[in-house]
Image 1 (cartoon, one colour):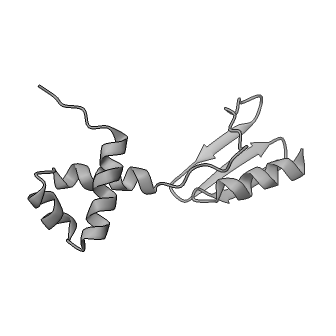
Image 2 (cartoon, one colour):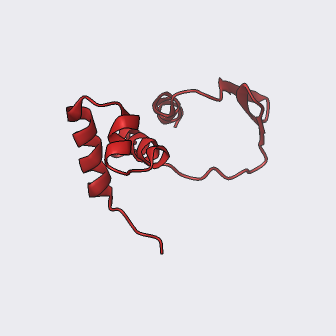
Length: 101
């Protein structure tokens, strides 16, 4: 039977581990917690949230060409071409799109 552990319980354990001074491995061993799951949930809680008010929309192709490779993203519309690194900040890209609108 699979038991469900709440997000609040994981948060409690993560805070408790940080205050304990124990390594994650020792804390998990002492509390019979799966260390891999502990690391996963700690990572999920530490993920940055998208900025408030940001809105993402799905782009639709209309006579344009979109090319993505491992290092950059290229959008071609007519004779215009925009090329940006795939790891470009979403905030920077949103600001660029807003200024072009």
